[in-house]
Length: 436
Ligand code: ATP
Image 1 (tube, helix red, strand yellow):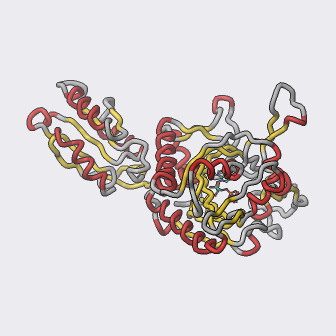
Image 2 (cartoon, protein in one colour; image 1 turned 60 degrees about the vertical axis):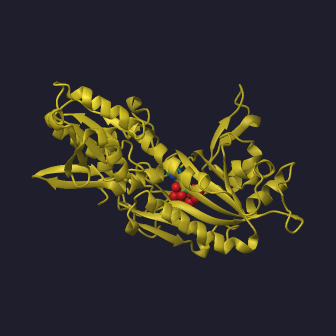
Image 3 (cartoon, helix red, strand yellow; image 1 turned 90 degrees about the vertical axis):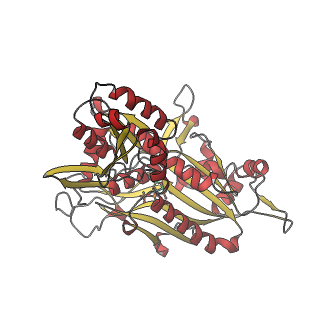
């Protein structure tokens, strides 16, 4: 996939109802996107798969859901007010703006070819808002730039109620906001996005082992979403990339058309966050260890992923253009776990009782899988539409159904069509989806 192909993914996303530009009828709002009917289903599938993998399937991880708005002191304690800056330069000639860590200042601007940079300047990435009726400076707070702090400030509340002992994790999924200066690459870097984060609290001496464990767990999760293995890598951070409190960190990266880019960070954050809140807040966040009969602040390994980046990865990774009988077919080879629709049901024509039979099959499938009923247009066009939506299976009811009570099952990837008994449709689908 070349760099231009991201535009093809944008166009398919709009055409099929995955993603629309935000406020499009007003000319759009830069770097904000809306999820359409197919997009929201796929996004929910990704979020559910994360929750299932991180929370539901583990005994020692619990979930929570904190408010987006938090006390402004939180962001002083966390270091975001002081340190959450990006260094930016502008090209004086064409006014393009870049993050200093994304370019080589000794080289010309990639947009206009001139080398005429402004001095680097700091931009705080937090989005300010004010609470209450007046925009008084006392009431200024921020839309959270990460979900993690909602977990840290509730550490004691969770420990006291969830009956967890070290090592254990607290997970959260939700919106975060950053006033990104350089945006672009579709969903990759936006000002409003969703994060899936888990803070895993441990004994300090286990940090190295736990960091390795979670890095592998998280890498495997992307593989389970069906993302091609050779497009994924785990990259350890160099010493100079590490935050001052962090001793080690991995990024999970995907090879997008615009290059290898971060999907998720797995970091050893030491005791930094809880220590900071213990300095700033009235109530202390400390763990009482019954084994050693002592109080201490546990070390934390953080896994921090972006929902929208995982979504974009699935779309880009699944996008294919193929030639079929001299015509181009665009298909999303999405894993059935992620695909917004699992099965599409088509009556071949709108008469001869075919719609009624198809409707019955559809209703049965719908009890277990996300299904779509499509009655209009030529069957070829209907198949192509579902190929673009990434729907793994199609069931067609035709005139032969009236004779022998069989239907056609079409496989999206091989386009192979086999006849199966109409009353065995659901069990046949189950069999195929079990191994998917
Ligand atoms: P980057 O270097 O790309 O700005 P980051 O290192 O600042 O990312 P983190 O603060 O570690 O990112 O955030 C954790 C995860 O949240 C990222 O790996 C990414 O998946 C997601 N994320 C962060 N910023 C954005 C954004 N502006 N748009 C979409 N997702 C984001």
